[in-house]
Length: 191
Image (cartoon, rainbow, N blue to C red):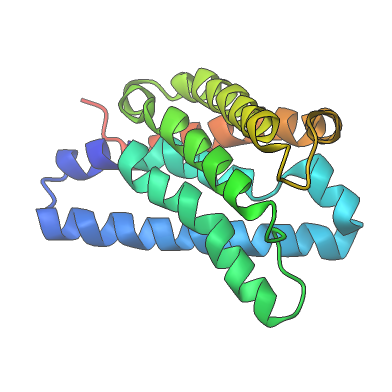
């Protein structure tokens, strides 16, 4: 969607790269900050229920397209882990990190595939987010099933966390598309 907005303004390639890089960095920063706020306010159960890192990644997919969003999805948990490790409380925990990287990469990829459709009609963000959520959670669960012999997770454990996270997924399934629709109104020039 951002690409469409920049094309309509005849932005140079350098301007496009700069703005997408800044937007990506801002979304990664938000993906690090939101979980900290939720964990301070609601504790660890709040993070499991609200899944705050997912929102910026889904927003990135809808706005930036799959390539840039993929970077946001992969880097968000890594940057969060590195920064929070310095404080002595890594989030996500190291054993969960590769699983979250894969899950958020899928979130970004799937929602990013809808970016051009979102530019045409912001309502496309609703199926984009829902499809991304379903695919990402399925990948996480599938990876745990494949890796449970050496990973510290079991399918029932992750399934219970997936069920606990439905409130966050539901909130994001509404909030992200509404943000996309609002941003589309600001960014896209109607002809």
